[in-house]
Length: 256
Image 1 (cartoon, rainbow, N blue to C red):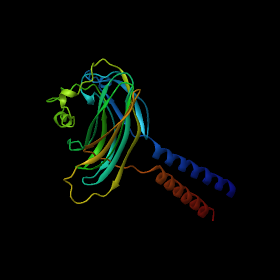
Image 2 (cartoon, helix red, strand yellow):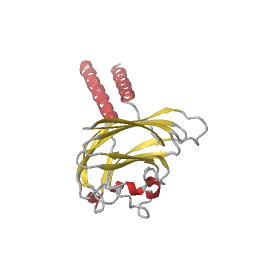
Image 3 (tube, helix red, strand yellow):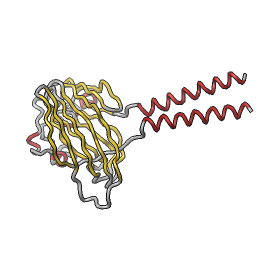
Image 4 (cartoon, helix red, strand yellow):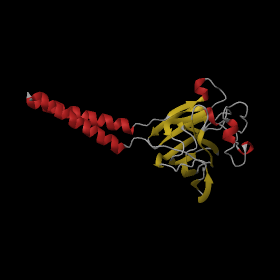
């Protein structure tokens, strides 16, 4: 009987460890496609895959409702004045595509904003370290059809267009009926260190790599950014093991 109890305890420990680790690795991306929600200016599509380090969005049409006609997002925790690093690589399979990456709160206080121009069949890698200029809780990739004409319609339009070096007029995805697959790979988002007490400086180091059939071009620029870190898989595994040990000890005490 005691042997059976020990076996049961071990099995329970393994199940708990695997379950907790799986939860730590589980992707937390959420998606929105306008047409799917009866907003016919938006994009039609779906999130066909996702992981902790990226996602794949298949769009039958990109729509004409601006970048927010299709969204991929996840919750984050960003504190004003703290330093973060964000990394990601974006690609578009069938058409040139503008993507807006935003970290903000529900009141549209931006901690980070960046327009990424992707050429058909190529990829763009972004690696930025920045100091947060606002507390924020959501990271969003806006991948819907953008034509620079949402001022007075979208709440954040004026602010997000201010991040485009060529202004709103430079943002043009070509044709709202285009279809494409937008992929995000190599995503990471983590805190670097506590920032100094002065929070007026928002300069960041940016390295943007564009890769395609014509080769790779490195563009070093300066921009504004923000990010945050999640509970690491290693920490999750350690927590799961400790929980499992506690379960075994408890089982032995009951035997005694």
